[in-house]
Length: 334
Image (cartoon, rainbow, N blue to C red; front, side, top):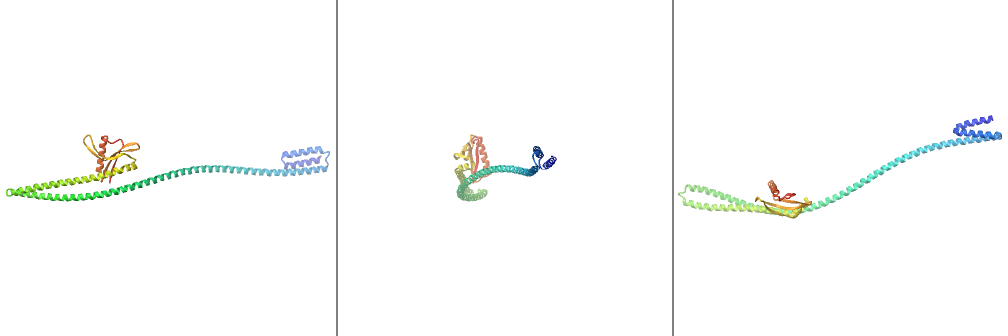
């Protein structure tokens, strides 16, 4: 009994070092119970075998404990790795979400840029069409300017010839004036000797009357020349007005969106106070659904005096209620 007790104590000590306390206590209790049941039956040989079995069991338990600890360490490392992988997965998912959001914003920006590109292409096409129409209009205006220049050259040549004739008439008038001065001098000299040269004086008076008639005829010729020059200037002005009236409807519509109603015309006006005005170009147009009165002036040479005169005419028309609420005043000049 004492031998078994010491062996059991030794086994308990060994089990306490290698096993968990509960497992060691359970093993000692089991052996004590087994001993109580078999102490009168088990031989020393059997007990030795039992002791060897217990030692092998303890060794197996120790190996199992080491393996369990290894598995626990491996489990701990696995859990740490799983946690690391879970954290990496979370960061990956966050990055994927960020990339998805960036992709969405990129697609929205691409769509916006595509829309801007489409509008830009439409605007370029509109500008190209406007450029084409402008070139056509420039070609038309260039041709019209060529025609006007040719007509003005013809008129300038006629004016040059008339000016030359006017200069010649002026020279003749100067010569006649000089002759008149000389005759006047002679008349004074004849007056001094009136008594002696009465007959010659009467003859001189007769010649003087004839000369006066000639001077009067020259004055009348000079007046007619000036009237012809005035008529020529009116002709040039009327020609410019006629051309302007012909081309203005298209130009007003293209440049100012003014659609001429009916036709443009030259008009004479007489006011209640007896005063009159000549309107070079007059008419009515529509602009965005409203009626607009057109008042134009045509001049071959435009100066400040013409503009002032046009402004005074506009004020008179406005005063007498001839201009509407909306008006478009312009000047055509070459």
